[in-house]
Length: 300
Image (cartoon, rainbow, N blue to C red; front, side, top):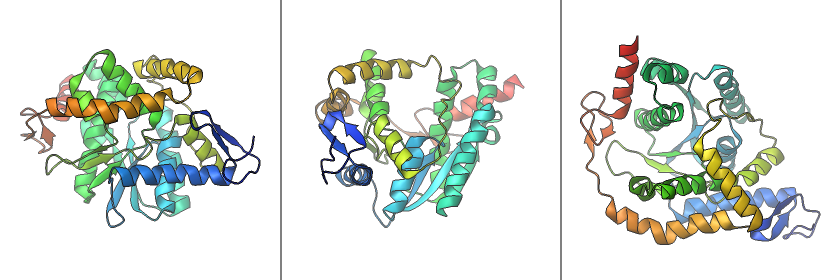
């Protein structure tokens, strides 16, 4: 294969683009895709400080790498979920990356915030692990951004993640998640920061190739609680479709964002309040995170 740009020996083939690239040109392609996502959705400006949520995986560290190289003012945020050796290793990867790049990294402990690590939360509440983890991460990312004065949080969700989430929401016709599915969610309340996903134009294989070519040391293992997750099943189904029809995931997600989401967005109008206890945004009197903390406290 020849590189589409320079004609040299290609190292990465992108079937959905009917193209292949040598390492330098693929890295340039990857960074350009991030830049286009930021520009198209006005995710953030050069003057804004961006809080980048990092997990130690290829996607979030790859995103942080791109934003650092492009000169954005960024700080990493690692949420320590307390998931046995998995969290220890993923935290070490984030700390090593931050030290190597001379970038600031904030660490927030779920155990300190809610009263137990994620395995303890699951045992105390008998709530599905991924549900409790997702609730905790959303709450703590927003809180950290508010506490430290960041107007926007960037996450490493890629094309595969977004297409799988969309597939799951459509299977059950969940109107609220469909209304919120976007590469850039604006602030709809003074205590809600913007949330953006600059990697939504790039696939999981593409982020893996970028991390490899850039020499980024990331955690390869999946979270031990991810086994059997419906999101992985949805990804597998979409991967089979992509294999048979390159570009299927891209067309599925982009088509929804262009033609489907506006209809759901108009249907979704939720009144937002401030939690009576912590002051964070909720649709009720007490936010879900405070309720979760109460359940953990009662169990002990």
